[in-house]
Length: 362
Image (tube, rainbow, N blue to C red):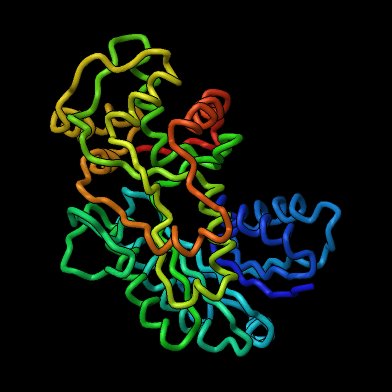
């Protein structure tokens, strides 16, 4: 029976937790070393207790640390032991907020990734380094974006995109020295079957927007002719688990994106009908909505970050040929958005007033 030692950053985040849960279920002998920021240790301990269940209790070990610090702020003895035993590193820790300030994004996304890279280079038993990037490192590029493309002179819509791009550049340099797999998801929604998600951010801002207009005629936001690439978290998890353990995944970059994305307008209509029972009846210009959201009081009332609007008119198509080809033997495919949006909306409806799931809009 296979036994691996996994080292994760980004726990107890939702995606890291889902990945760990899936790997632990499939590999009962494998062990998990979890780097956790001091502020998140209580939550991490709670989730580890849930993960343990009836499984071996010593499989999951929490280590206080900080990716923005030298040697990940691990105790020296702990770090040296891990460098001898870790076989797979999953680096998910990042600031994902589209409205994040540059200094914070640089510190966590770029400096943090540089520090993780340096640490990985000293791991003597390393078999795979899995880095979570984003499809949106493409910035303002238009047309078809291929998996083997990265730095092509593009500009960026926000500090999140810019720093994730710069971090991926650093990881790309690792590919000649460490077996590396880079994952670029689209915009991640909740579980396609249950709708479960940790936070109502990203695409859920659409639902929060619709909540405010549900008792009046609902407007489309702009023409919405661009394609919006949404993927459920379970697809991202299943695909990543498979690709991170398969030899084909070495030295590859994968777009875990929807090969058949919907136009933003159509996706908005489907969400509106599922949440409010009615379709939008008129179009409000994108520029008008953007001006409205430039006023903090209105932005806080609608509960939508202004930066979200940019993804409704992004003229990019994310080619995922490499991912589809390497996933084909597994039978893992991206579900159709129309099939799983009812579950996402129902989960939102049941939990929309849960403070733990709400993102503060300032």
